[in-house]
Length: 311
Ligand code: SIN
Image (tube, rainbow, N blue to C red; front, top):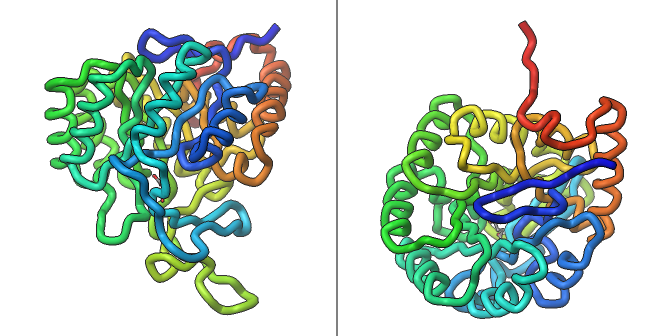
């Protein structure tokens, strides 16, 4: 019998996989499929803005060799929609409600609404959407990130975590961890897509997606080394109470295993879920179990965070 559980704040997850925000989580119908999927221990709703948003126009997602590129621009049905959904289903599994305000005021106002509501799950504050024209990723602005968290924790006392952009410099791992460690965060989710990349369609010699002149976030297999590095670097630096959701580059059970080895508690799946649908969770769970049995592990705690380095 293989045990694949995790805990964040006061919640126990009976499976460690979930969707990445943005994939299969915009409508009730999509969310229901994740809620019921074999192998999924939770779900996260599409990052909400205070009111419904259409997102960016034109072709805004494309598969590419080794992954995907997107510039969705936060299409979503508004906070109340996702608050209603999560409140309705929160007794079934621990759930994540994701929010992504376009300003500090938006984020604080949404947190106030959630604080006053019957929602009793976990909130993911998305500080890392790369796809809203004219709005830089907050997670790259350390001062503003600290300010938002300072103001949020002055009143918000439900379990709160942040979705981070990928960092690429050891100094930046140190800087963001120092800020995050000052707050009673329940978790961090790392990484969002690798923002503002470019991919060319060789048939047409055009950019593969339309918004922002073709610049978009990349995910899928190509993002795996960056995801592993961010999970590992943050696990080495964050207070142990701050749990980690590892996101990026999961195609197989071995990819899930590697994120756990680097320190992930839960693992979320984006591009591969988009490509295969919710049955991907059952496949990944079985492949992870196979990988664990090759190593004679029966519990994810046997290897979580146990990555060895070379002398
Ligand atoms: C999007 O809607 O553009 C993706 C959301 C995100 O990357 O946070």
